[in-house]
Image 1: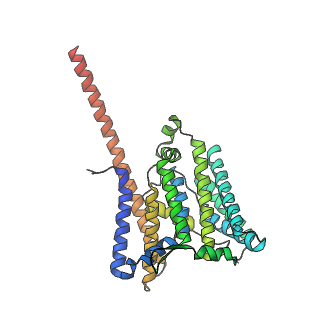
Image 2: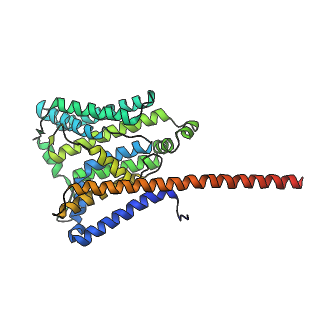
Image 3: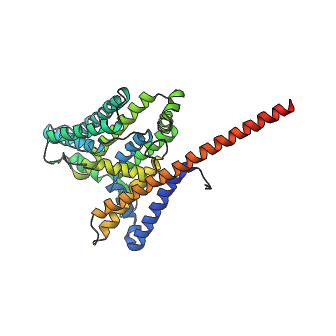
Length: 345
């Protein structure tokens, strides 16, 4: 099978093509999709999911998983609401404490995964139940937030034209995306992340700091999940112990649909952004169509995830078939060289 470009580009190219196809179908069906306001809504409505998915991208690139992110959204939201409304902290202080708690929580999970060689699935599953339980202990009911700081932040944004405002929450998501791209592709830490996910044994032999990188990855995921919870709190102006149910699955879906290999080592942060946009397009398209149930969103996302997993499996098998062929060819070349040198002698 002839491939005109490197195989690692195929998943993200497929993601881009699917995004364009879905957007094109939606635009033909509903011309309102072409408006700038709808595009802004894609980013704004999915800003908290996008922030969480960016952290999940780094985790999956190392070959791990983090199931605690949805529960951390609930925990950080309830913590911010409790500190702001119950203890009368300034929201900025409450948010800083929530971010610190999320970072420490992720770091502790990373320590258990690395030092005790525990499966990330089990460790983060325990973290998911722990964070959710802590959130519900603090409050079983939604805690409304009335502080004027929330109103001021929600009113901030950049005017793209006279009618369309890019809100502050969307700007936070885009800023985190830019930082994540820089970290993943332009820093040594990012190269270490790819090395660990690509081949752990080779990364160890090359002197990559496995433990340090893993701890930082899970701490980063914890920080971004807490930040996503803070953004969600601004989005709803409340903290709720049952918020973010299933959000970890949405984050994983965005990462996988974005072209990141679930086994790690291959993927792009930009692909996750496109994956989030695909989720937004599907949800908006179904909401535009009054005849379709919201459950169709899950069905379409499930089909896309299955298709991308099969695509990843396909090209992984092609890569494995090509490697023995290359090795055999190299062995033949070495044998011919040896025979030639023997004949000349």
